Length: 600
Image (cartoon, rainbow, N blue to C red; front, side, top):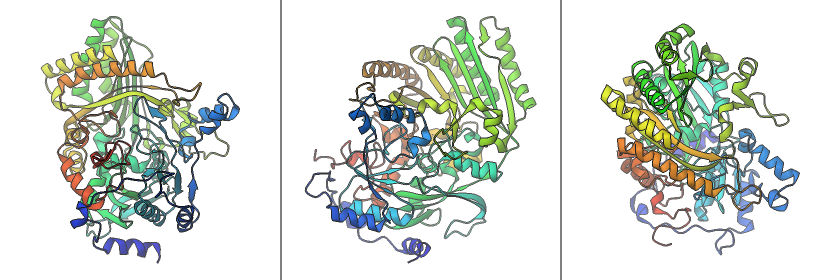
C-alpha cells in the first residue's frame, strides 16, 4: 500500500477495539525492562529492525568513555560537544539538558528507531504497545522536564524527519475552507532551519520559538511562544493540521474538520501524551518590513534608585510597549542592574527612537542611574532575521556556528542561548502575571515593589512575549481555541526564576554537579517565587518552562482545560502508552512511567 493510501485509509477507519468504549476501562499492565522475563527476544527485535528498514539501533551511553577514562581525550571531546546544540541534537543518546538536581538525569534508551516515515513510527508504536515497553519520543531534545529521556525505554527518534515544504495555498484534509499560505514541517525539524526556509528563502513568517535549535513539533505541542507572539499569537494557534500516529498504531490526520478533539489537544496539550506527531502544517504570515532590537543595560547606584528604575520601566512598558510591536526579555539582576533586551516588529529606527526617547532621557537625567553600555536601538530587513550568511557578516557576535567538520552552513544559534547547551538545571520556576497588575498606577506600584523584593533574593527574567495581553482580539481569540491555560490570554508576561550549571553528570568524577550549591539556589528561587505568588496566588505556568516539582501541574499548565484533555487522552490512549512527566494522564503512573498507580 502506498504511503498516502495508508494514511487516508487510517483516517477513514472508525475507532475500533482498544479506542473508547469498554476498552477504556481496562487496567494497564506494568511495563518491562531489560532482563525481565517478558522483555522482547532478540528475534522480536530483529523483526522490528526489518519492519523499519534497518533503522532500529541499540543505544549506548556516550558517557561510557568518561567512565573508562574521565581525563581522556574522548571524554574531554564529549563535554566540549555538549556546548554545541547541533552536536547534541545529532546524537541519538543525548538531550539538550543533561539533568536537573534531585529530579532527573539524561539517560540513554535501550533501543531506538531513527524513524524516517510515519510507517516507521507506526511499526515502533505497535511494537512498544504489544511488548509493554516504555516509549519515549525525541525530536529537538529540548526538554527541561526530561520528557525525551528515559532509561530502559524504546526511543522514537524523529531527527531525520526534517523536511520543510512551503505552500502558497493549503486546505486541511476534509475541510471546505479557502486555502491559506502555510508550511509543512517534519517532526524532527528545528526552528532555525524552518525560519530559514520560510523567511530567508520564502519571504514569509511562521510563528515559532526564540531558541533556534528547539524542535518545531515540541514547541507547537507545548503551546509555544516566540519573540513576536503578541503580533502573531502562539505557535499552537497557527497549527492547521497534524499527521499523528496514535496508540493503536494508526496514522491519522487531525485538523479542525477531521478528529477535531485530537487536533485541539495537540495545540498546547503537551508533547508525548496523545500520539507521535510526524508532520505539522502551520499557517504562515505576511512578513513585516523590519525586525528590530532594543538593548539597554542600566545600573542603579542605590536600592532607592533601583526601586525607582523598576517602577519607571513598568510604567513605560504598560504605556508604550504592551502592544503587538514588542516582545522578549528584561532581566532584573543582582548588583542593581536592569538588562533590557526587547525585540520589535514592523518598526523602523526612527519609530523605535521616538518610543524609547522619554525612557532613555529619564534614565540619563536621573542622577541615580547610568548606562552600563550605550543603548542600542536598531532595526533591519526582516528577511535577514535568520539568514546565516547575513548574520555572520553583520552581527557576528550575536550568533555562533556548529564547528563540526562538514557541518551545514545554516547551522547557527544565538550566542545568548549558549548557556542552555548541555546545561544542568539547579532549579526553575515560572508564573504568568496578569495584565490587571499594570492597568492602573496603584497595581503597577504593587508589582514594582514585588519585583524589587523578589529580585533582591534571586534574579528574575521577565519574558514579555510569553503572554498575550496587548495582542489583538483576533490573536487572543485564536489562542482560546488551543489547550493552553487560558490564564495566558490575559497575562502580559511570564516571570521566570531559575539557576543552572555547566554540563554535568552525577557520579562521574570531575563532572559531578555541585548539589549543595544547587539546593541552596533552589531555596532562594522558592523564596523569590513566594513574593510573586503572594501577588498572584494562582497565576499558572507554561509547561515547557516550569518547575519539575510543580505540585498542582494540571491546573497550572492547563487550567480548566485539563478535564477535556484527560477525556481526549482516555479516548485515544486508554492504556497510557504515551507517558511523560506531568503530562496529561501521567497521574495514572509511577514517576518513572513503568508502574500503574497503586501497584508500587
